[in-house]
Each structure stands twice: as structure tokens, then as C-alpha cells.
Length: 276
Image (cartoon, helix red, strand yellow):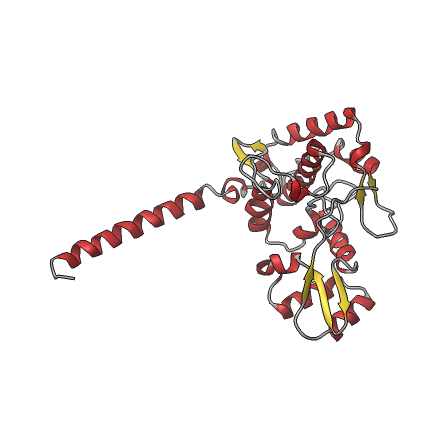
């Protein structure tokens, strides 16, 4: 490279780098987390989830011998589908910034779960949510824009990975949002609210950690849900993950966790969590 061409080359590199940084900054500015991180500390505003509760209570079998909450998609009536649609429409009109953070978190969890149920019902019968392909989203519906809040088009991924995880940074989120699969933590049989949020998150964590699809001793090693592998950044390294699991483990599960050695195995069942 000649001495005359070097300055031009450096200028080109500088311009390209600046343009790249501008694109990245623009993308970051458009993140759903930036749009929805505002909240009203001490707000008494609550969201009416009274339509969602009866749907959960009617169609979830939360006493199944498997310990997995199963949903009776085939039994959902046309009237109840209409109630679900109305509920989702009302959630899209909510002034999210007018709530405190607990009420907001409960709102987004319920929104995600209700929207997932609607996606399954709209495509039922289906063997797995991964069999559903929507415009802009293959191998599952998670990337497709499905709702609009505050003028922002949102997908299921936007709600979970663009809002809930970055704003709250709470690994218990993974026990609350439900992907309509056997391997997923249970779909709660009642709505989350700001008031019951912490209790329900802890209950959901204990339920999953102490079920074989969450944590299971397999010989000398632990077999864990693939959730713990997919979201290592939320659960931490091996020792941090063990410490997290021990917070919610019953005595038998705790013994298995402490006594296991070697690397973890991971597994996940994508079959639909439907009542057979």
C-alpha cells in the first residue's frame, strides 16, 4: 500500500466503522426494552385479568399424575375463544408505564401465556408448537409479530427476550412463561398479579426444579432441562446454576444435585402440553 493510498484506506475503514456503530445504535434504540422500561413507582393501577383466570381454571388439568399441567385445547369453546381474543385486545390497550414494576411483570407474563394459547388454538390440532410457521417465523411462531402495544409491533420473542429478560433480569421468568410444551415449566392455573408475583414465581421454580423434566439424577450425572443450557447467561456457570437450583430443591433433589459429578446432560420434550 502506497503512502498516498493509506490515508484513503483508513478513511474508508473509519467511515465503515462509524456506519456500523450507527446501525447498532439505531437497533439498540428500537429495542422493546427501551420502549417499555418506564414504570410508575408506588402506582396502585392494576390490570383486570378476570377473563384469563376462568379460562385457566376451566381448561388446565393441574392435578395430573405426571405433575405436568396439561391444557385441554380440543375442549375450548367458541365463546371462550372469543373471551380470549377480547382479553388479548384489552391487554394491547394498557398504559404499561402507568403501572409499578411488579404489576408490569405480571402483565407481560400473562400476555405471553395467553398469546401462546391463542397461537395453538388458531392452528390446532398440532403435535408441537414448533410445527407452527407464521410469516417471518419458521420452526415455531416466536418471531412473528402478533400484537401491538404502544404502537410497537411485538412477537413472543419480543415479550420474553426483548422485555421481560432484559428489564427484570430475573431467571425465574423462565419458570413463568409457557411455550405449550411438555418440557416447559407448568402453565400456571391462575393469573399472575403484582400482588402474588413473587410467591407464584417461587412456586413455579420449586415445581420445575423438583420435577424430573427440570432436574433428574442420571447415574453420576445430572440431567437438566435444556432451558438451563439455552439461557446460561441468566443462570450463570455450573456452580452458579447449582446454587440457583439448590434454592428451590427439596431434600431429595438437593441430595442429587450435591452428589452428582461430571458435566450436565440436557433434554427437552417439545410435544404439545395437551390433555389426551
